Image 1 (cartoon, rainbow, N blue to C red):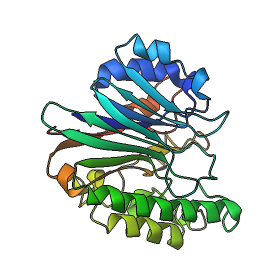
Image 2 (image 1 turned 90 degrees about the vertical axis):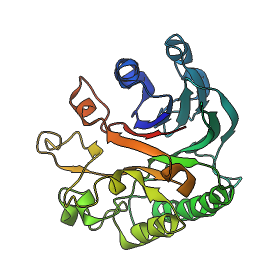
Image 3 (image 1 turned 60 degrees about the horizontal axis):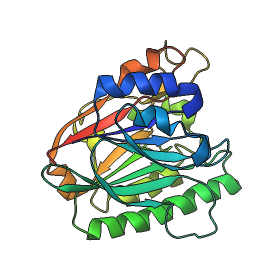
Image 4 (image 1 turned 30 degrees about the horizontal axis):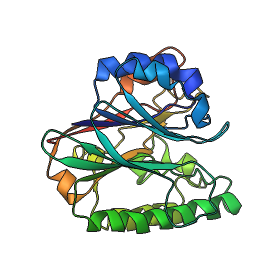
Length: 262
């Protein structure tokens, strides 16, 4: 089962890229971030015509997440538990049914947090603590779980082409990385890093539109796929579809994916 994540940076602006990538990459499940539309505005019929089922958790103009699937899906849930007053659409999860087993898939768009310090950074850290608590509950199920999406976290200096330029950014501040480590240390496997343990620079998943970041490979790795022990045991392959950043009018992120024996 191939499970992918793609921060689409506006589904209406990037529908051409998504509809070209889906048949080429052939994932079974996709979680999207930054769809930037209410549920009613998502072009579900276009995606469904390609053979996909669609579930959205949208928000006007900002944020928004979705699940696309070519396999059976059960128990779709929207919103990260822990704060009923949180109106930002950043989390969606479901159980997907493979040929060999069911996999719980959680798609997330973690807050950016800039400027830091400030209220937006406080919200980021509070959201990460809620995520830690929910992630612990997911691990307790002892089921294969894949938690993936745009984490807006640069875990290590090697995850940025120029880490010194990010020293004061909310994506790389010590408190951000410490909060991310508290999640990882529960027992999650960073799928991309486990396959590139000796790499000292990259790989990257995001390149800004400005200052020729893509042309100069001035990227960062902020899109992650975390696997529960049961999912990690089933890992067959992992990848980053880097070529997508070079497409016409692309998202500033590229898809990441894991392939499980499921």
